[in-house]
Image 1 (cartoon, rainbow, N blue to C red):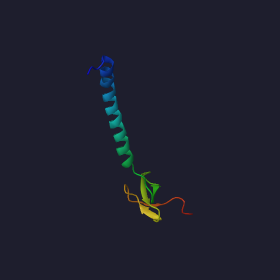
Image 2: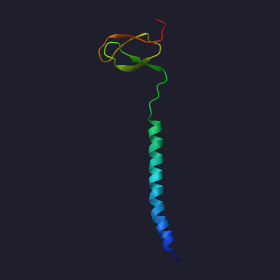
Image 3: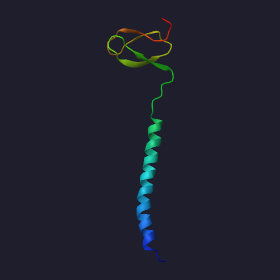
Image 4: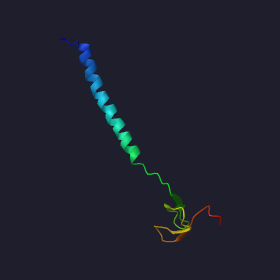
Length: 78
């Protein structure tokens, strides 16, 4: 059984490229699983220190985790 030099060069180039493609696809799949998608939270901004944080939709007044002041959520009609 003889193998031509062109076939050997093809395997030499294609196998590492296929491995890199597999690693890239695995990394993309893993990164998509770890993405944080808030579903029941809204983004609130403190009026005092301008710190932005997530809070529950049902809470009307929340405390800023940085400065401790009370923050009223925007869009509640007031």
